[in-house]
Length: 341
Length: 125
Image (tube, rainbow over all chains, first blue to last red; front, top):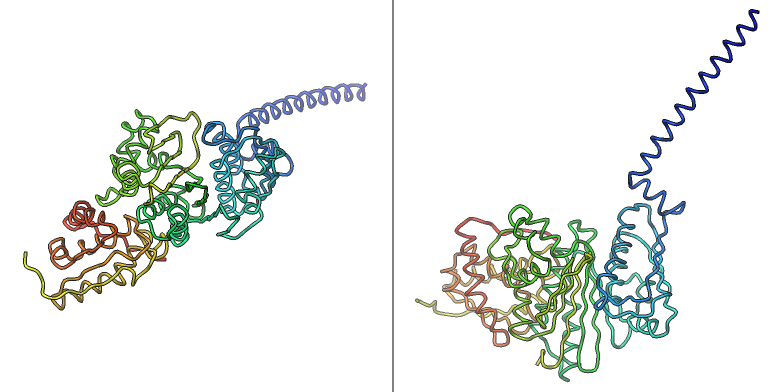
């Protein structure tokens, strides 16, 4: 009888213990579910990068034209940068271009700038060539794959393309040499071109100033393309972009004014010198207005600028707003014989 | 305006063929470096000898506006616009645009900084 009571008590306690365990387990599962739904960098790494979070593979789509398809291309860049910034363990990025059928020079330069940006963050790059012959030829001509495998800062790829990249320091010696070559290519006689020197120097300094607030992450990429009757200079940096960095610096004073205006309007006003420099010094903020003056009033070059949500063709006086933020600044300068003579 | 008697002519080419950015920490051959190592000693010599200093801009690959601003602007900050305009001539046959910018933008802006005691930034490599 005693043993029977004992056993009943035993089973009663055991049942209570089981129920308590079930309740605890349910509570724990609920808590875990709640944690899982909130995206933390730790969860992001676990869920998105799987077991091997040191490698990121990115496939570019068929249409990779930057100037005609700016929003879609910017979205691709944002996708990569988002993953790079969240994943501290990333060591290798694989850029897969096998599907690419259409690509322009601007897109190639921007991808090379991205590579420079990743190199500044000590991330290795690996690339796959496009299957499409024309796209492959275009990319090979710019020395893309040579650049991916190289660690040199300045490289000569072919007869028509010269690329240079840098970090938080300007390099005027490199572009001074190229300017002399451009003048010789277009006019037949070698010589300097002061206005082009000023434009390239100022956009390089601008890229250094606006690419990042952290000096280790500052980067720029410049390439010179020689064609029959013209030369194209493309320069890009990846980081904050002109307007976003301006917004950060001048938030206090110009917040209301800026928020009511579109990015392209702000960019035009910046080039016209309507905004005060972040340093608030009267002698500063002359770089962009000087470029505007050289391009519009003195006809020294043709200039297109893409930064954040602004697309500005200064020489053609055309501008449009972009729906996707371009994370940096891209300049395209076209020079003909008329401009340098 | 009373002019000084003799003239000392110096070329920016003596400093560099490729003048660079504004500050020393931004890159090689900066305006700040040119001012500290060349322009200021030249100008002090000219003042000591009661001479006019002529700076020849031609011969280089070109200039960044920030280089010109920092180099010649600091001179205005240290000596005042009147003294600089009296004792300095900036000469350029190829790029006359800089003379116009110096007179209309750079000198007035730096004179304002001098009046307001807004000292220029000193950077290091």
